[in-house]
Length: 74
Image (cartoon, rainbow, N blue to C red; front, top):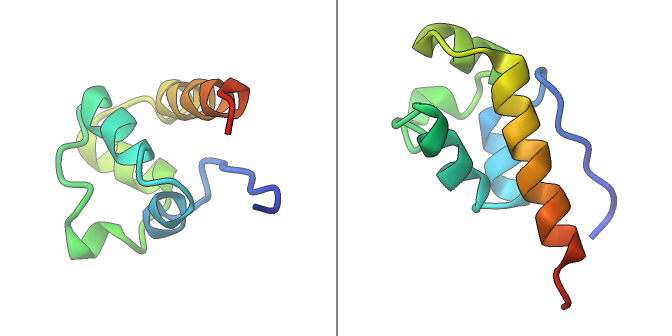
Protein backbone atom coordinates (compact mmCIF):
# COMPACT_ATOMS: atom_id res chain seq x y z
CA UNK A 1 0.00 0.00 0.00
CA UNK A 2 1.39 3.44 -0.85
CA UNK A 3 2.49 5.73 1.93
CA UNK A 4 -0.42 7.45 3.62
CA UNK A 5 0.35 10.17 6.13
CA UNK A 6 -2.23 10.88 8.78
CA UNK A 7 -2.33 14.41 10.12
CA UNK A 8 -4.80 16.42 12.16
CA UNK A 9 -6.33 17.53 8.83
CA UNK A 10 -6.99 13.95 7.66
CA UNK A 11 -10.68 13.12 7.57
CA UNK A 12 -12.05 10.40 9.77
CA UNK A 13 -13.33 8.55 6.70
CA UNK A 14 -9.91 8.56 5.03
CA UNK A 15 -8.22 7.28 8.18
CA UNK A 16 -10.68 4.44 8.64
CA UNK A 17 -10.51 3.52 4.97
CA UNK A 18 -6.72 3.32 5.30
CA UNK A 19 -6.84 1.09 8.41
CA UNK A 20 -9.98 0.08 10.30
CA UNK A 21 -7.83 -0.67 13.35
CA UNK A 22 -7.64 3.09 13.89
CA UNK A 23 -11.28 2.90 15.05
CA UNK A 24 -10.11 1.01 18.15
CA UNK A 25 -7.48 3.68 18.86
CA UNK A 26 -10.09 6.42 18.49
CA UNK A 27 -12.53 4.64 20.79
CA UNK A 28 -9.81 4.10 23.40
CA UNK A 29 -9.13 7.84 23.23
CA UNK A 30 -12.77 8.60 24.07
CA UNK A 31 -14.24 9.03 20.60
CA UNK A 32 -17.03 6.46 20.67
CA UNK A 33 -18.95 7.59 17.59
CA UNK A 34 -16.40 6.68 14.92
CA UNK A 35 -19.13 5.01 12.88
CA UNK A 36 -21.36 8.08 12.89
CA UNK A 37 -22.03 9.17 9.30
CA UNK A 38 -21.52 12.84 10.17
CA UNK A 39 -18.01 12.16 11.48
CA UNK A 40 -16.71 10.68 8.22
CA UNK A 41 -16.10 14.09 6.64
CA UNK A 42 -14.65 15.68 9.79
CA UNK A 43 -10.94 16.15 10.19
CA UNK A 44 -9.26 14.47 13.13
CA UNK A 45 -8.74 17.90 14.66
CA UNK A 46 -12.43 18.84 14.33
CA UNK A 47 -13.60 15.50 15.70
CA UNK A 48 -11.27 15.84 18.69
CA UNK A 49 -12.52 19.38 19.35
CA UNK A 50 -16.12 18.15 19.40
CA UNK A 51 -15.19 15.51 21.97
CA UNK A 52 -12.92 17.70 24.08
CA UNK A 53 -9.85 15.65 23.20
CA UNK A 54 -6.31 16.82 22.50
CA UNK A 55 -5.78 16.25 18.77
CA UNK A 56 -2.00 16.00 19.23
CA UNK A 57 -2.40 13.19 21.78
CA UNK A 58 -4.89 11.29 19.65
CA UNK A 59 -2.69 11.70 16.57
CA UNK A 60 0.30 10.39 18.54
CA UNK A 61 -1.72 7.32 19.57
CA UNK A 62 -2.70 6.68 15.96
CA UNK A 63 0.89 7.04 14.79
CA UNK A 64 2.08 4.69 17.54
CA UNK A 65 -0.51 2.11 16.48
CA UNK A 66 0.49 2.40 12.81
CA UNK A 67 4.20 2.16 13.64
CA UNK A 68 3.52 -1.04 15.54
CA UNK A 69 1.58 -2.48 12.58
CA UNK A 70 4.49 -1.73 10.23
CA UNK A 71 6.85 -3.76 12.43
CA UNK A 72 4.68 -6.87 12.31
CA UNK A 73 5.57 -9.53 9.76
CA UNK A 74 3.19 -9.78 6.81
